[in-house]
Length: 399
Image (cartoon, rainbow, N blue to C red; front, top):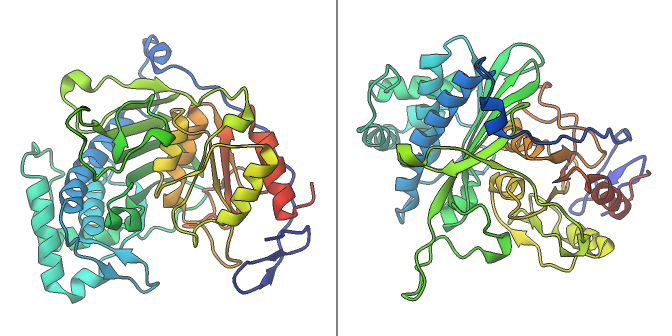
């Protein structure tokens, strides 16, 4: 697929569209240790927001894990033909309830809405049973959902249009629904955006290994059982970041003794040929052919690893992988902000740089989509310019 300075041609229907060429803005960021931040006597910025976000995502992940184990996941199709499960509805309701309890004035931009549940009471009641069971062991702090009708009303609280002023939360209750359905990777995603800038990001990745040193190339099928000679892989990771305070990971749904966050950082790359790409499983989400050409141009010999969801952001942030590309395949497609907000911040706070294919930072201030961006290029800050140059060469973008 060739991207010229005047137009872009899709691989599917050869539609032409015009995009301005914007020069790369280099804004490398060096992660700061959370332990260093803790030495200050003043409370850290957004500490309460981070705590609430982590608790909300963990509670939602309890529900999604329960649905994940079921052979039938209650899948229905939305108007755009994309799949949604009972887990999506239940997780979103739980997260919104937590946010409304602690931050009632904040707006919410969320992926799902309640029309399907209003039309199908059997589906509504199924989702409600899951929500009620998932919250059964939760101390009621005012955020527990009262009944099915309250749950449906909460789902429709996520219709904010976002924008460049004020506070809003971006929610993707199950990012990577197709991965969720096939038994692969998925993520529960939440981010706080203030005046168009992401301030807090949290990702729950129930199927990623807890071990931060596990390389992407070492990952086994999360649904497989370990052999008798090897111990089972502990899975479930909670990634978190606050702007200017670094990025961390810890076991998901851990005991109090395990809740100490571990600082994470992207892996230093001394030999680009040994870097690991990760990319979307679905060819409809990113151009696999262009990515292979970019890898050849950079001399990368390691095979790419394909996984669903923002688990890719978390993986490269802790050095399990190195480069994440999401290359445009359709002229009309606009990325949704909830698919990138939390992961974008986590990677940047771990020492990475995230841009679109033109070198622009992802802009979360223009509504529910990344309308001013095309594609995603995420890599360690030191090598991002070289990776971006290769991307633009393969896509035919004038540099």
